[in-house]
Amino acid sequence: MTPSTDKTPSAGASVSKDAPEAIKAIPVRHYGRYVSAVVVLVLLALLVRAFATAEGLRWKAVGDFFFDDQILEGVKNTLVVSVLAMLIGLVGGIVLAVMRMSKNPVTSSVAWGYIWFFRGTPVYVQLLLWFNLALIFPILDIMPIYKDEMTDVMTPFMAALLGLGLNEAAYMAEICRAGIQSVDEGQTEASQALGMTQGQNMRRIVLPQAMRVIVPPTGNEFINLLKTSSLCSVVMYEEALRKAQNIGNNSSAVVELLLVATVWYLVITSVFSIGQYYLERRYARGSLRQLPDTPWQRVRKNLFSMGRGTGSGAQGA
Amino acid sequence: MSTMVKAERVCKSYGSVEVLKGIDLEVNSGEVFCIVGPSGSGKSTFLRCINHLEKINAGRLYVDGTLVGYREKGGKLYELRDREVAAQRRDIGMVFQRFNLFPHMTAVENVMEAPVQVKRVPKAEARKRAGELLDRVGLADKRDNYPAQLSGGQQQRVAIARALAMDPKLMLFDEPTSALDPELVGEVLDVMKALAQDGMTMIVVTHEMGFAREVGDSLVFMDGGVVVESGNPRDVLTDPQHERTKLFLSKVL
Image 1: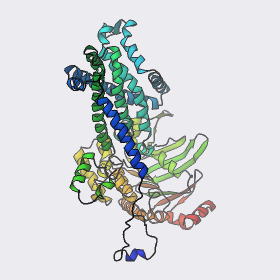
Image 2: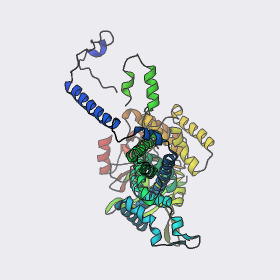
Image 3: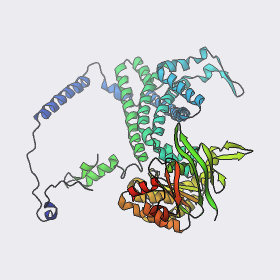
C-alpha cells in the first residue's frame, strides 16, 4: 500500500545494496519571514511595556485581589450557574432534538417554535423577563403541588439559571439534531434487525456515535455560556464580573479588578478546553485506527527520544 | 419439511414507483434459498420486507407461520407496535452489504450487544458466547479490535457472528460479498457454506452464481419486481427457460 516514489524500473531490486545518496541541499532563505517576525515581536514588546509601565494601573492590586474571598465566591457562582445551565441545555437540547425529528407534527412544531423564540431573542432580554416575572405573576401557583410568592422563587440565581439554561437548550437542540442525523442509517437498520427497540437503538447505538459530532460544538457552547454568564449581573446574580466590579468601584481600582476577572475567565475556559480535548478523544474510539497521543504522552515521548534526531515528533499532529 | 417463509402476492411501492409487483414464493426450513437478478429488480427490497425493515403495501408475508408486521383479527389488519415488531425480528438474523457493524464497539462487543440488551443475557455469559462465535468465523484473535481495524471480509464475518448471537431460525443475507475485494469474497462464502451445512435456513441475495450453484437448494430469478423463473439452482443456471434469464446469465457468468 505504500506509494512508490521510484520511477526507474530497475531501482526496486538494487535498493538495498546501492541506495542513492540522500539529498543535502541548502534550503531557501526566507528573509521576509525574519523581517515580519521582528516587526511583530517589537510591536508586542511595546504593547506589554505600555501596560507594565502604565501609571494608572496598580499591578500589585491585581495580585492582591486575585484570591480575594469575594472574587473566589464570584468565580464559584459563575461556575455553578454555568454548569447547571449547561446541564439544562444538554437535557433540554436532546429532548427538543428528538421532538423535532419526531413524526408527530404537534411535537415537532412545538420544538420548532421553542427554538425559534429562544434563538431569536437576546439572552439579555430573556434574563430580564425571567427576573421580572413577578410583575405579571405575583403568585406562583402550580395547582396541586406548589404555591408561593413569585419573588421568593425567582431569586437572582433562578433567573440566571433559567435565562441561560433555556436559551442554551435551543442551541443545543440544533447541535444534537445535527449529531443524530450524522449517524448512518445503516446503524439503525442493523440494530433494528437485531431486535432492538427504538429506545435501545437511540441510547446504545445512535447517541454514542452522534457524540463525536456533538462534543466539539458543545464545548464551544459551554465556553460561550461561561462568558455569557457575566450578563447575569443584570439580574443581581453575584457572579465573577459583578463581584469584581463591586470591589473595583469601592476601592477605586476599576481596571485592576476587571483584569482580575479577565484572568479568571481565561483560567476557567482553558481548564475546560483541556477537558474537552480528552472528551473528544474518548468519543473518537473506533473511528480512528489509532488514537492520537495526548499532549502529555507526546511530551514524554519527545523527552525520551531527545538527542535521537528529529524524526519522532513529526508524525504526531 | 415445514415452511419457514411464505410470500403471497407481496407488493411494495415507494410513492408511484412499484418495486415489488406480487411476489409468491415459499422457503422451506433448512434450505439455502438464493435470489438473483439485475440491480433494481427488487430483490433487496423483498429481503428487507421479510424482517419488516420495509412495509409491504399488499399481499401477505409469513415467517414460521406468523404474519410479519401485522396482526390479523376478524378480517382486519392491525399494525404491530414497535416492541412487537422488534420481538419478531429477534429470530431473524440479517447481514448487510455494507456490514453496518457498530463502529464504537469492539468485535466482541458488537456480537454481545443484542443478547445483552434484547435478551438480557448476563454480560459474562454473552461475552463467552461471543468469543465462541468469533472463533467459529475464524476471528478469535480479533475480538478486541474495532471494526475500523478490520478488513472488509473480517468485518462481514463479525457481522455474521453478530447475527448468529441471537440464535436466529432464519438468516437473511443482502449481497454479503458485493462490497468486498475479490480476494476477500472467499472467506465470507466459506463461513456461509459452513452455516448452510449446519442446517441454517438462509435467504441469500447474491451475485455469486458459483455459491448459488454449489450451496443453494432453490433459486429464483427476479426482474422488474416479479419472479421470472425459479427452481433448482443447477437447472436454472445451466438451462434457463426464459429469455430474460438467459440474457442476464449470459452477462454475469
